[in-house]
Each structure stands twice: as C-alpha cells, then as structure tokens.
Image (tube, rainbow, N blue to C red; front, side):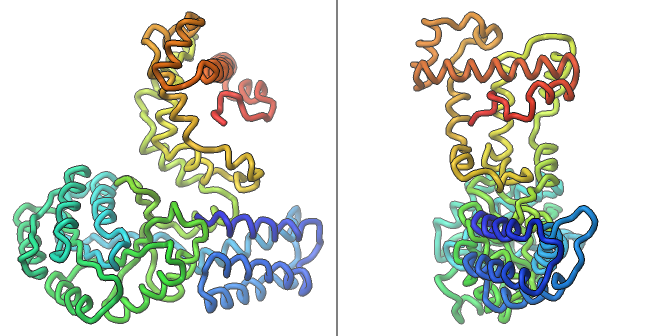
Length: 452
C-alpha cells in the first residue's frame, strides 16, 4: 500500500536537497509534485487542495534547522499534516460497557464484511483476551452464513446459527440474549450487503441498529475503490451513525487514496486495515505509523509489536543459549528462523516496515519475494534430521535426493548450503564477540544468507 505515493514523494523531496531555504519558488514546485502524487493515489480533490495548502502555509519561509536540509524540513511538515489528515492517533474500539458489547458490521456486497467479522473476532480474542460470539443476519445469502460458521470455528469464536427464513432483527436479538446468558464479552453482528446503498438496505440496518444499540457500528469498505470508498462511507454515515471504518484489501492497493480521504470526508476514523486474506491479517490503524511508511521511514513500532507476538520466545531463548555455549548453528535452526520470518509476513511484509527500504532500486525490490523462502524451507524439510544437524555430510548423492524430494534443482540445494554457511559464520561471530563483531564482519553489506 502507498507504494506509488511513496516513490513520488521521495523523488520530490530529493529535489530540495542542498538548498538553504524553503522559498515560494521551490516549495511551489515541490507541492505541485505532491499534489500530482496525491491525485494519482486517488485521493479526493477537496482533500488534496486542503492538504497542500496547509503544507504550503507552514513550509514557506521556514528556516532550515541546524543540521537539517530543506528536504528534511518538508518531510517533517508533510508527515505531521498526513497524521492530522488521517486522525492524529489510533481510535480503539470502545468496549468499556456492560457486556456484551455489540459491534455491528455494515458494508456493500463484496467489501469483505464476513471475513472482516472473523478477523475482528480473532483480534479481540488474541489481543484483548475477550470472549466473542458472532452471528450472520445476511438471510439473502445462505452461503455467507455458512462461511461465517466455518470462519468462527477457525478463529475459536462462538457462532450463533441463523437461516434464510428468519427475520434479521429476530436473529440479532436472539444472539444478544444468548450472549448475555453465556456472559460473552463481545457480540459481532454481520449484516447483509448490497451492490449499492438502497432504501431497503438502509431500512433493515436501521432496524438492527435500533434493536441492538451497538457500541460500535463499523463500515467495511474495499480500499481498491479509491475515493469512491470515502464517498460511499459518507453516504452511509448520513443515514446511520457510524463509529469507524474497516478498510479491506489494502495489501492489493498500491495507491492508498481511500486511507487518506475517508477521515476528511466522513469525519469518522479508520479503525482497522485488512492486510491479507488470512484471519490474522488485520491491523489497527495508526495514522502516525502509516504516515511514516508513506514517507519511506518505515514502521519499526509495528515491526517490534509483531515480533513480540509472533516470534517463538522459547525457540529464541534455546538458540541464544546454544550459541552462548559454543554449539554450532545448524540447518534446523536456520529453518526455524525462516519459518518465523514467514510468520511475520515474509520478506515483503518485513521490508514494508523497515526504514529506508523505499529507497532501494526497483530491480532489487522486485527480487524480494517469498518464493525463495518457500523453496529454501522445502529443501530443508526434505533433509533427514541427521543432515539438518550435521550439514557437512550432505554430499553429491544426498544433494540429488534432497533436490528431488523438494522439487528443486541440485543448484538450488548448493545455493542454500552456501547461504547457510554464511549465516553460520555470522552466528559464530555473534556467539564469540556479540553483535558488534558480527556487524564488523558484514562490513555494511547485506549477508549472503539473506534470501534474495
């Protein structure tokens, strides 16, 4: 997400380097590029005009601070204005009410409502330690009811059954009653979608809203529709009080116009981003972190939080202890590291959050994909336990067997073993002299053990 916008803004800021002052002339040229970048990202025109005017008013004539270049001053201003545009801080769900707290999910057909319901249930269970019950009021699509039933089982949430011959309000009130009896913390109600906002849809969801009195009414919208997403949310909000927006399919949206337009057009915050198809692919929306990613400064906080949740601490502690005792880093350990990298979103997910990665040449970024990780894992899994623990025994015949078993070529096995040896040397340096020695050994280069 935001890839195109990030590239355009990075180029614009580079043009200001080496100048001693932000003047009318150079800021006008830079803002013309910023304006074009935002419009190409499908940000709504009124939002673009207001944003660029605010940046211009702050930037013109502002002296460059000591040790800063004009480009850095502009980055700071643009960053702060992006944060203001998207909502200052992360708006969390307001669940501090007498249980069960009701969350009503609304949206158009195909926006990802049912999947987002399951994702939110998983997020509430894992991050907030809440008990969750879900139900579907989509009586027009029996497949949606069955889909939610299946997803609820996958994420470990309770499911209140419904059928196509029931009234949506009757389903919702019965689910609420069961949630009360079972002392459930949160009830999430999935509603029917339409191809467009119509009077029948709005009448039905108004009745649901009146019957449930939800603490959160979330509008689920597809980010790929760009500024239309913001306009749809605005029309919906005029008919029903929204509390927030869930922006889906952001992993496939390189423009990001919806994320930058929704808050300004609706006045309602984006609360979550759907960042993939899996049920764990839901992130709280942090405007400051998103602004940092747009400007190519990475999102280290989110990366640290993700590592905290997903890295196997027991395995990490065992590996640290093993290296400390002078034992060798082996292919079993290497495979564990690759698996944990995949669990954190793979190489693409990691690079998106690392500072400065937006400055890498396009041909380098194109090589960063997870196919190589999957191939390496397949090769390691084709080895026997003895081969993983004692890689030196992997000679010609063993290499051919491993290649055949993993669907790879012998050259792929050779390359993995070479990369592993580089990684093994790095780990040895770490165990002997700590991180400082390892970095000195790398001499500022990306290690060959890094799979691209």
